[in-house]
Image (cartoon, rainbow, N blue to C red):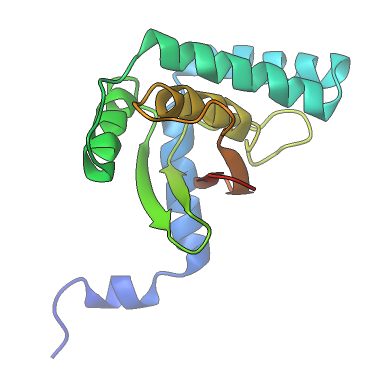
Length: 168
């Protein structure tokens, strides 16, 4: 006999999950900032090429990391926990960090980041550049980090931004 809730779990489609996560991501942006962020991103798009816009947004993310520094962490679970504490403090979702041993890289899955449809990115994936800078600032501040490394987006949807941190 199926337990209560099993039907919902087995019948929830990827579209339903995407809608839910997208809703949660949008909910994380206070109403008074939505218009401003949309105007900001659209202004950046109108005045900068994509690479320049993303470089500026990465710099903003790195500055944010500097404003919310992490302590030195001795393990990946500790690093993930400290990052998630910072993210929870500003209602910016959560991250899961995994290790890809074949590529010797970290894979970061940032979920439910604030998302505003703006410019050519109706799903709000422009936030991925900010997250590259934010996570890059945090990872770069850890003992033994390599200044030559920076997180780069592997995939981005309205719900999840996946970053890879390692050598190319």
